[in-house]
Amino acid sequence: MINTRKIRALIVDDESLARRHIRRMVGRESDIEVVGECANGREAIRAIKELSPDLVFLDVQMPEGDGFSVFEAIGTGAMPMVIFVTAYDQYALRAFEVNALDYLLKPFDRSRFDKALQRAKSRMLAERKELNERALAILEELKARSNHIERLLIKSGGRAFFLKVDEIDWIEAEGKYVRVHAGRESYLLREAISSIESQLDPKKFPRIHRSTIVNIERIRELQSLFNNEYQVVLNDGTELALSHSYRKKLGELLGSQL
View 1: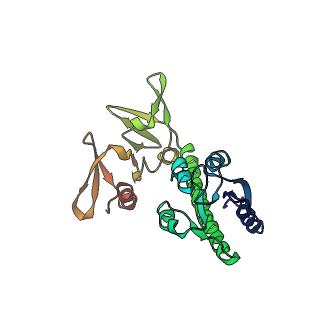
View 2: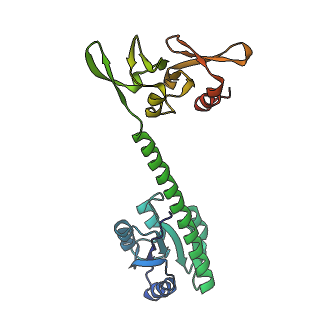
View 3: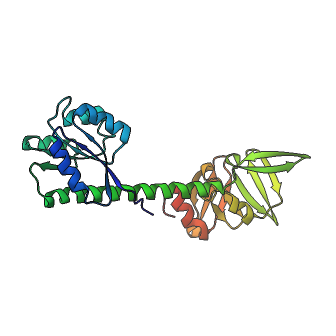
């Protein structure tokens, strides 16, 4: 769901009448709140750092630092959206060079002001939508990652120890159980291959055959055989059959078409 909090606006102008005029126009907007006013560049820099506004109505010519010096002090990457409000048109090109959202020339009417506000709202909506999509993607990734085990409990030769899944080369079904191959060692686990598969990250441990799971980091090459068949060759030279039903998925993970 897109965040619907109000747009926080800061008004910066050395003329009190101009600040009141902007505040009056903004006051008609239910989705915008004025969080502060400043009369010069120095105050603006401090207010932006302390209040973190989303939008700044910024005059160009002011005492104690003009509008562009505010940009320089804050930095383009950290600067909120800016609508320049000024009586001087000669700064318009420079304003857009610093990625200003709009440039209002005094005196401006309600229609022109609304156009600038709509641009700000559209930009904010797009940014919040993108932020929400990124957040959801990260949450899904974390959720998926939390469901994947990082180690297996191995019981072998009268002892029990943990084997990190990253150390696994491949896994094969052996009757109702599975045999885990890790380097020169192999271990029999009393679990079905489907159970082990559900616990592992499918992007790292894809199924390549109904009886085989492989660590994708151990794959050295794919060899084409007769009758359009393939086999997977691991770094240690192990050759594993690649079933036709799992070929497309493995190709997607490896970034190739099979």
